[in-house]
Length: 349
Image (cartoon, rainbow, N blue to C red; front, side):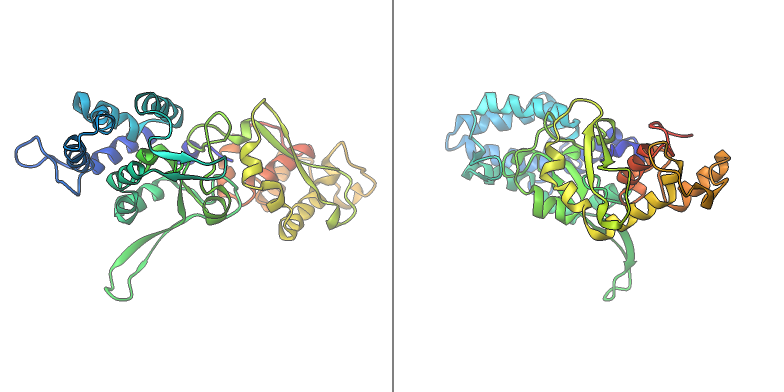
């Protein structure tokens, strides 16, 4: 739904560089070598030695690709934005051949090859997920709701450990691999490939689907708000069950993400419909598209800009589209408010 950059005061490209530095760690006392297990570079070098002894030229070529020129491609792989990650995928496929890391079964499913499993273990996402840096990075993104669905809460909370009595931070969210590990294990810890999201979106709906920046929205790449708008099927509602949500393109783009995350089905939840119906009842007399026969009931409600803002604030409508993630169903509510004529399709400052 959102572009994560809009919701944080941190320079994400700088944060990605720090993430890379933390992954490789400091060199050992000789200034050349790295820890064989704790450092990503150390693990890559160790596995390259094993594969060179086989010998397996394609495997060693892959590791050399990452290590060459003072780790230039490894830096790109860890710190690049989603569109560049796609370029890296193409480079690796051209070098190693399609299917070298993954068995692409179909759109829904893929499994790793034996070498893909090795690569996954070298990049070791599970190790990163246990580190405080992971939780700190998630916290710095300042997300309130899943950036895919804008429905489920994503939280980083601090509490007291009952056993140690020490404060601890917990990331109550999942990290979705936009380019799935089962297809591209070497992107397991790439900063812009890790989307903090909810369990329904990640574990239940997305799973191993073949996502791509040309067909799906990556919240580090584009705003869905720039391309799609949610609408009421009808602006004449007499009862709650009349609420039906649809969407339309504002700019040409695939709706694959909306389909895969079953957004319309989820927004059809009766609780969500109730929220939208109450919003409709409050705004309908302001809309030029809706019958004003009972407008006298709220005479003067929209006579001033301040009163209009108060009404929208009372219903928790994001006036600025960069605030969508701060509100559950923020985009849906904002879009319908625009449809009913109580807000223009632009940010209000």
